[in-house]
Length: 594
Image 1 (cartoon, rainbow, N blue to C red):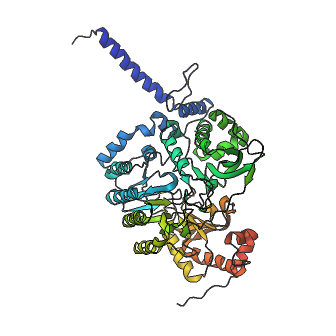
Image 2 (cartoon, rainbow, N blue to C red; image 1 turned 90 degrees about the vertical axis):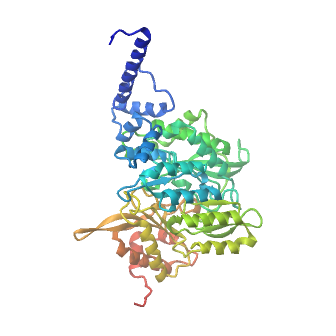
Image 3 (tube, rainbow, N blue to C red; image 1 turned 90 degrees about the horizontal axis):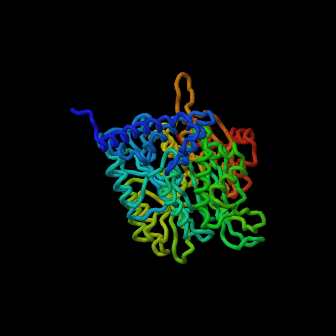
């Protein structure tokens, strides 16, 4: 065979070899800084790559997740996801993390299956989408879905071979799971009563929709050092818990002030992460509604530029702000936005009407005369495929065909005429659900727990339901109590903002280790005028000792509150922990027949 090449062959060979060398060079960039005079990164991932280069140039070492993202962006790995599904295989090693970019979470060893988390902007679905998700959950998953604390849905127990079928079924419904996990912006939350709430200042639905599509259509929104949360609060009755988010937008009425046109603005809050004991802080910036989405984009870009790529424990927005200082970070946001942001100083602002953390349960009149929204209780957020279809039918037959999820793991059916409320309640009851609940179950929130999450130390959902059974039999509570059970330090159930917050722990008992909890009390959020981190009340309590411990605490509350209107939050904040323990120790308990 001749070894002589014509000019065309030589040119092709030269290009081929150059391509190989270029790929080798790109692989090395993950572990070294660019050389002098090297061209800056270009393309949709330039922001992420430049941040990684700066970290390495400063003497840092990229964490394994950053190196993997640099080698090839996770969103460019679709063929691998399809290939594994065709082979009936789950991902291994770093591929477990990378696959989360497509919304698939391999949850072994808790379950040898995938969980799929969706993106539902403002937490609102149409009835036909709800039916489609019920079919998908039944065909490709465990036949149920879990409502999350981001007003979202998760489908669980998905076999490896069904993963892509599930994703395609979701996309056929006009939904997506893209970027719902790993180092991405999670589901955009907004007021669940948006557009129907008599006290709201602004309908958050258009803003959540615009933010959702902004993320989907800007690749740099997927180049973050860690997860990120955004919430829009329109001033309605049902809380969104915006102060627990990395970015919180809070609707505010401005009545005047020099340089201010009267109208509705949004206060900008930054850096909330209650699992790390921080609420979002007020930046002192007021935004017009049409400015919010682009400012959010600027905040995310500033985070991507300055976030820590060498230590995942310090990579959230809170730690960027702690390191840089609030003013310096806001200056970086303005640099990315391209203009100075409007300061609130001098504005005449109307105080926010208080939200009701239990306003998502029951029958409530809408701003539209003669219409109501019905708030349903889902036991710790779980709903079966059969119930999903039934709820879709009720919403379509008697409402506007709209299902609205809340951050409290429940849902609303809106636009029900006065004359149809009774038949709706009866139909809901036929599904095994209801619009009323006990004082314990109204505010019962639980993460997945170790039945479906490898990080959880206890069976939070199972324990929550048993705990409710126990307390309902022994206490005549006439005021709702929020109890949040979370399985690990990720605090998905936001235990620090519950009246009672329980974080799972392994408790030593002799030579054994049993499931248990650390107990925190007296937490709350800003929209209900209760913004406070819960304080530790008891540590390492085995689960079988937890129900009587809480029984005594709640009995002390009933015995020593100032009036029936005195909330558990107010009761806890009036006393130090030692005094509360003493009151609980001496609390009268209800005797039960054997």
